[in-house]
Each structure stands twice: as C-alpha cells, then as structure tokens.
Image (cartoon, rainbow, N blue to C red):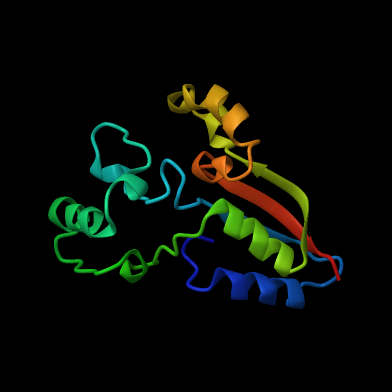
Length: 149
C-alpha cells in the first residue's frame, strides 16, 4: 500500500470490484513507523524513525550520495515505486471508507519471526494498542479483507 499513488482510490476500487465471496490481501508498511522510509540499507546501524527525524530533502540527498547516485529525485513520491507517506490511521480510514471488512488483520508478525527484532516485541505489544501512538510503532500490517456490500 505504501507504493500506491492513490491508496484511497485503490481501496475503493477493490471494495467495489470484489465479489461477495472474494478476498483481498493487503499489506502496508506505514511511513511513520520505525522503518517506514524504506532506507534501512543505507545505515550500518539500525536507526528508527529516520523519515520523521530528518527532512525529506536530507534523506533523499543521503540516498543519492550513498546508494543511488544516478537516481535524482525531489520527493519520496518520485522514487521508482514511490512512497505515499500513508499512516496506519489513514490506512484504517481508507479501509473503512472502501467498505472492506477484515477477515484476518494483524501487524508486526516479523517481530516474532526474526531474532533481530527481539527488542521491539515488548514495546510493540503495548504501543500498538494505543490509537495514534500505534501509527509510530506498527511496522507492517497484513490483512485479508471481504467486501461489506
């Protein structure tokens, strides 16, 4: 979802086109999350919330200087594949407006799959239950949805 230019429009189309018995699988890495800027490969030491702590201009300059010297972009949306800066709360609002009902909806499953995420587990259990705060702690969300129509 974070690479879709118009996520609200896409979700509405999915909700409109999905058969009553049909299912849609969606995944999302919110931009406000610790790794949401998708630039973890540029850093030798994991550094969370870079996209919130540093300006877009600074992050894109670092990207150009250290990783993609021939890829001149002015905004996150200009990156091949784009980043729409969608928050988890916006994603939930768009799902509701599209009349998509969760069959299964989970977040942060990677925390239990990979030992490198061990430190995030207790923090995630608490912070992802608090509205607005969870925008900054849900790193990935996966869901299977049905149409409410």
